[in-house]
Image 1 (spheres, helix red, strand yellow):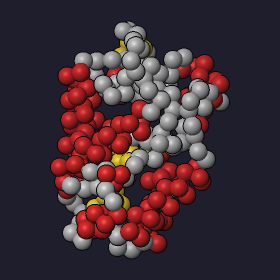
Image 2: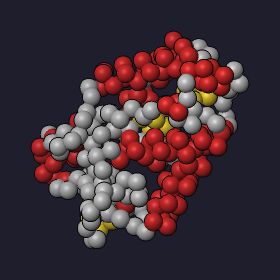
Image 3: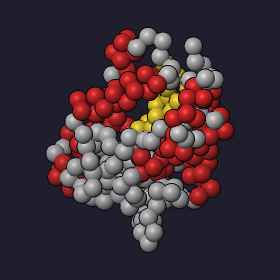
Image 4: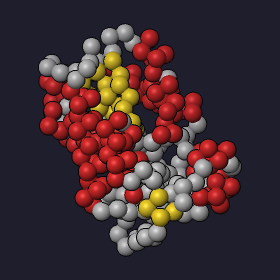
Length: 233
């Protein structure tokens, strides 16, 4: 359930019986022919679908992250690392002060890794609170499903092309784009990265059947829900 569908009194009653909560992390950045909000859309929807049957609240996703290499593309927003980590930890501070002691972070953007790296220091200052950082798309079972379908899958390729990340009237190419060198992308200046990437995709097919991508989605929801359900200390 989304916290925006609750008032504080309802959330207070929830905390009398459970202390789990979900925080999605996304990004607003170029995704080729797909929405600029792909990472945010997917992280928040994944969190909601995984948590809904368990009655666990989901906070609004953080829609901005770290994507400096994409800032040559209009619409990409990238925070400074210190800004991002500070915002992330401020949110955790607020959740912990509200009484949430088991926090699942559902991350939808690989560039947000510094948030995960900052957790040990935050946890030292907050004994009694547990935080799990879950990259939904490359968690073991979900990534295995991707690989079974087509291992040529990456940023802005078919594996992010869901019915809810497509744009009306936008038809992607049908051919398979050669995979780019990810390390090179991160070493280039933003204008150079835009020139190197062309349409923004990292390679592979732009689109596969709904049956295939929804299999990836189902694996992600199941795996994320399993993280919410078990293994907390």
